[in-house]
Length: 236
Image (cartoon, rainbow, N blue to C red; front, side, top):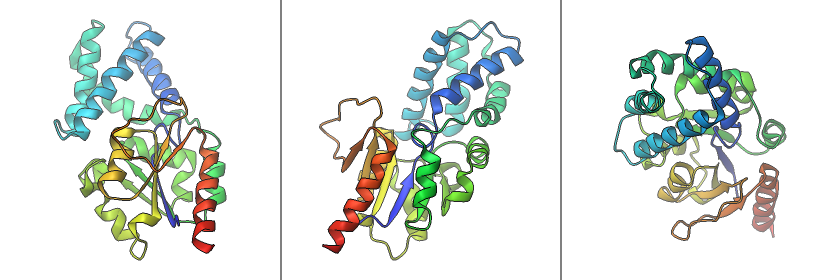
């Protein structure tokens, strides 16, 4: 029986690609850089992802992610990498300017409110996530918000989940479901602490054979069936 849901934010509740693209294009204009093309956005996305994955493997610090990704990206397109620090500072707030919900996520969370406890679990920065959660209204809908920067540990490390379990005292691990788009942080994180996992896979990528996943969905509306099914099983 699912008695609590842990929601990832970027790429799960909110369309991160839309926010990332809008923020980059806006800031390139603000900084007087050359036109930011869609190809540049794709290139940055790949660089950014590789830095976050290194963080998840405990190879680098979050500060090295935030600056290093822009230093590497700027160097690749012949922009002075010394702009990275100021650009990253502005980027944190610019990310919250574009709110695009994935699959009616706000309506889904709203309809589950009061029926099942729901929490945000995110590796995003405090500045970026606070603005996104306020502007999207998720800050008012969730029962709690857990950000790795506050906790001091990133998903998928088990230490990230320690305060989450503290807040969910009385609910056993096999009754907690983490929903996220990232195999390396959300699903691996859930597996690491023995909670139920739900991979949000809208692009219908092939599932890895070496990572156990309890549920795979391509649309967030499918969460209703999982929660209802688990309650039905419990009551039958």
